[in-house]
Image (cartoon, rainbow, N blue to C red; front, side, top):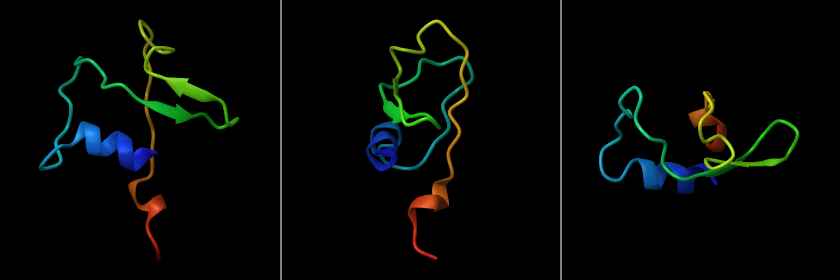
Length: 58
């Protein structure tokens, strides 16, 4: 799922979103396994934390 999110977020070379920019659409799961979407977080401050190497071997 993160791969899909990042492929939408980073078309071409990887880049950072500018501070204060609108978040691209996404659906992810919280630590309790509940689905969370960008719509659920609209109007709230949120930090999307991920481990890029967690989906790679070794």
